Image (cartoon, rainbow, N blue to C red; front, side, top):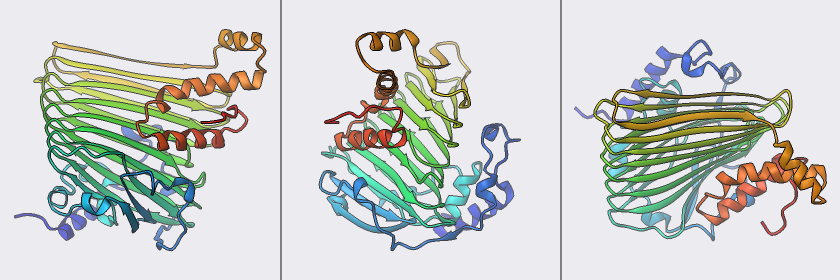
Length: 399
């Protein structure tokens, strides 16, 4: 018997009641205390809040969906042609595991609007599809639920952007399915209010010979948890995960990734970078699993962190879990400050100390930023980086 949407909601609500809010006593949450989220009497907001113009790509995107406090408000471009209730609806809740993950259970129980996009087999989408989520208000929560199914040998670029005003909570889940031979470029930009909370789960399922690139860039938010789970479910699949978190003040960002190699000849490449100033805290907790039947696996996992103050903290925990010998896997992490030799070199060329420091910080970040495929999104990320660290980054005219 096939469970209905109502059945799934009820099961998820019951499961969240059993699991409860996670605590630092649990290994997967040891670096992040969500008590500030749990103690708030959250309520649903409405869709009447204004949409920030600075984050709109209405005329530059192939399609743009806009959601306010979890409610769909508008779409433009080719959105009507790309949105689908067929296969996408049938696959909803199949991949993101609400039985094990409390925030996924909470989202499933309270799921609001979200994008359901199905790219037909062999289709190449020009430009990019933009999903814009706006949070607005105090003690308001939202639970967007997205499902993106990319057909065989299809190609698409997807961008999720999260912005807002006030002390709100966004708990979002995106399920991304890449069919055989599909090519997907995905970017998530978190520019939430500095008083807001954000927990985002990205569940990626890949079939044979599919290639997915997913990058997560976190700039805003008081407390952010980015959870990415990848299942390489077909021979020859490849995943690239890029991450950048730039934090200041008392911001807290926890990046938790799991890449599961289930089949032979699959590749994974992971690079996360953190820039932390003042009393910010960042976490990279990455896990690569290579199953017994996943021979000829190639995997590399790297985390580099730049501390700009003596009070910033970063926790780095790259992990390999390998269950066969026929693999090429490595991992590593670094935590450091600005290179004094590079700083001296720039200053010897007549560049002031503040600008020289800013140039080095921007160069550290640009390795990730420059990989963003959609040019308007690269421009947005650069702009928000300058806004978030105005004393650290030099003005870059023409960017």
